[in-house]
Length: 133
Ligand SMILES: [Zn+2]
Ligand SMILES: [Zn+2]
Image 1 (spheres, rainbow, N blue to C red):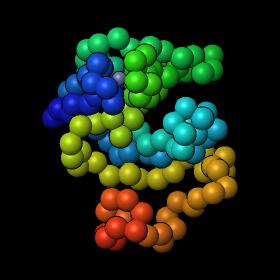
Image 2: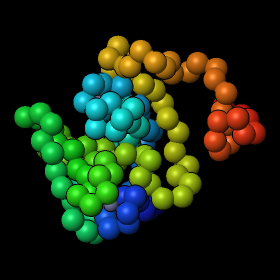
Image 3: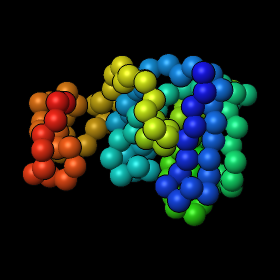
Image 4: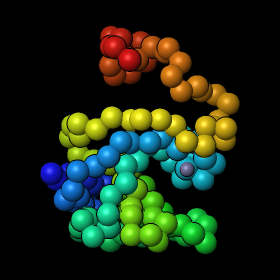
């Protein structure tokens, strides 16, 4: 089982050679700051991840760092120095077959949205065709 991912500009590419578990959304303040909203990620073992291209790290706390593309700023990885890396699900290429299983740090979320709320899901831009949530 293998997954491919990349940043927005394409300078950074990675491959994950293992099955990926559920995707979990994180609403903590740090994740909201770095992404502009909230993130969704799936854990992998670093030893199964191959990265091509320059990866820049930001140490967001003494226990963890966040990896991003220095050219386009895409946020791809979260690491806690425990041998695991959390892959930002939005950077995976194509269909993933993964499912999101829940929301963490929901008490820290922004006040402008609610997870699970029945909201219109437009296929493309606001006002376009609505599709199933
Ligand atoms: Zn990039
Ligand atoms: Zn977080």
